[in-house]
Picture 1 (cartoon, helix red, strand yellow):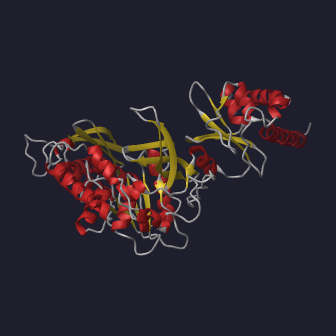
Picture 2 (spheres, rainbow, N blue to C red):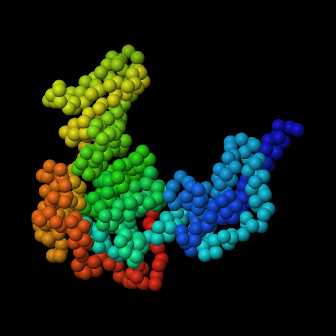
Picture 3 (cartoon, rainbow, N blue to C red):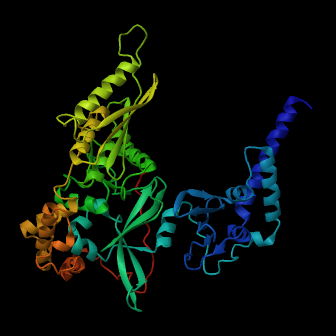
Length: 531
């Protein structure tokens, strides 16, 4: 056989194998296969368009769909954006196949060949009697909306009554479809009756769409789904240049800052919230958005506490603005109960042969000297000081561990070092609220100006008094702040929820309320253009 004939045979086999693979993905029913390997159909979590299969042992949840364009059956995990695929992924995982080898592919063809010859695995209504497989080509967002039973924002009592976000802010184009509602039913902890209500929801997104949700309500703050690589992000308005990006831990702080300091033009500022301390992959998503919108300035607006300062230090090290000079120094901060550890890594600068330059050792010594100079300036030798230790000492990399007490002045100095080492300049700015966060700033401002609804003015005055007392109290005990010492904090929470009918009406959209009318359609979450 000539080399040309051998090559032609290999090409023919590739075509035949690809045709078989296409048949597997189109004709093998995933619900039947998952049922055969131990998954159960979840009637409670399945929707009209999206059947769900659950693995009892691990709790893994898979929503199933069919691509209308290709005809392929596929699955994805609404709680893990990395967990998705077709029958090939399921069989390979279940049989522990190595598809980088011929043996792995031979076994996959054997298993899938048996499945495709079984009529049960081609019957697409098997198991899920009340659900039909969705057929839109890219519909993860719609599936997530159905999975979490998300509805349009119609109940704003929590935001307008307790958080004092006004209707104009909620109606700003930056926040259209970025704040939603979710109904809940739960059993009263002390009574037999069921309690029904509505939570406020902030969807978490990455390049693939919505991956999870932050759910807020009085005394309730919970995240569902995959937060690891997603953030809450306001709308990116086409055609509007982005002047600055605002990053906070909490979406409500974004709304509060927008109300306190509106941008010059709608869309000139993009808001992001991480739902707490940012993780490694969240920084990658944030960096991708920064690269896309190309802002002039990044505003780090985390809580005005020790945790917020640590957030700023890590963000200064992990994020790179488009026109910011590159730095050979990276930092990472972590904390224990009483101490903070700052890890500083230096990649020594290399210069062409013959050009005078400090040696790697000299660069590391200069770096240690600068850290000690800034952190321990005017600190008594027998008092709280930062200690330095060189962990790695190689020409290609130096690592320095800095340990110091959990004290605000020292953390502020470490934050200033991060700005200096990362050469952030005016590209990245740290802005701090006067109170603990910008929502507290908003409440205090409204209390002072008397611009809040009449019913909430006594509440705002009480809030201002409590915040001031907490700042001046030796131990910050809330129970000791009441004038009589007998008013429980929960009574204040209940008072804060008071909202006038006029305030609610200002934000209510026209038409029937899907929460109370016969319509129970979920809202389709809009794409944000992050791809």
